[in-house]
Amino acid sequence: MRHHLILRVSTKLLAGAIMLFAFYVQFHGDYSPGGGFQAGVILAVAFVLYGLVYGLEAAQEVLPRRVVHRMMALGVLVYAGTGVVSLLSGYAYLDYNALNPGMPEKGQEAGILLVEGGVGITVAGVMISVYYAFAGRPPRISDEEW
Amino acid sequence: MIETGINIALFSMLVVTALVAVRLRHLFGVVMLAGAFSLLSALLLVTLDAADVAFTEAAVGAGISTVLMLGTLALTSRREKIPSHRPWLPLVVVLVTGAAIIYGTLDMPDFGAPDSPAQTGVAAEYIARSPHEIGIPNIVTAVLASYRGYDTLGEVGVVFTAGVGVLLLLGGLRARRRRGRPDGPDGEEG
Image 1 (spheres, each protein chain N blue to C red):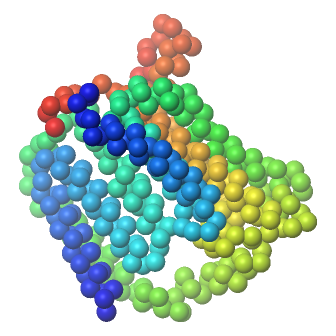
Image 2: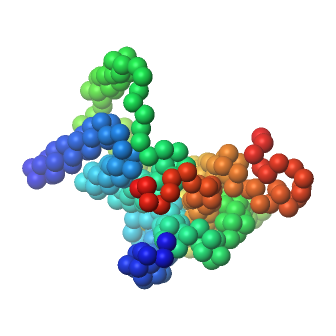
Image 3: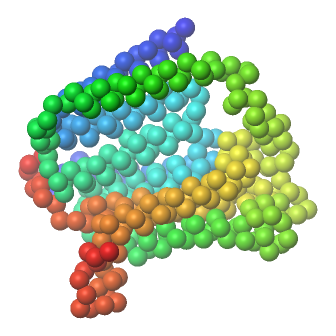
């Protein structure tokens, strides 16, 4: 696919901006619409776009399969682990007051940041893995047939 | 008044997109129309002030789903086969189901009615309590991640399970299995 010059150049320009936007959506979710689910998908889109234009191998050089597979599980572990931390501090499961007993509203803020982070990691990992799994199968339709 | 106009315009475009997608046999066009359908749904959700849901619909429905359907298309066929049977029975089933659903909506409270169950339940409590209980201004995030943290943990579990399911079905875990068991078949069983 050496011939898609405009696509290749604009992808290079856009990929970084898309990732930055994903992190904005992730960390600004406390103040504006957004959060882990949306941010994870947008982060995945950056890699999907890169893979579509530069080929699957190039995308997997940046983010190998085993890393995204571990991301899927890591996010769930971060989320569930936050609950275990509050459980071990003597609070109810997923009660974020445990993270800062002196100032519960700060603890809530930290807990929400953690679990939203877990959501984002899992969603991004699943979306990228699913894309890798689909794109990794040998296609039956040649490039010219579209 | 202007909102009614926007709603009518969006819904008409939604119906036209759906009808064209059903009639079209060229599947690449159908996938593109499905993406347009998601984008129009996202716009409708914006007019309902559900920015979070609209965001997700635009990112997942119009973005990722379109790419995955294109990936599926590359693995199967570009054109839909002409069906061998007449579509009358499915049409009747769809019409009856649709009529039943519309009949069901007649019982629903008006949009934005103050006495609807959605307004009289826990929502008022969340709005009253979250500003001083939780140190973030976005009540949607506070409800999603804190008050309803169990639900969201379940949702993440669902996303994880779906991802694992796709990997098992499509053989995305093949490389690892081959390394562990050099003489086995490459991940197609099970």
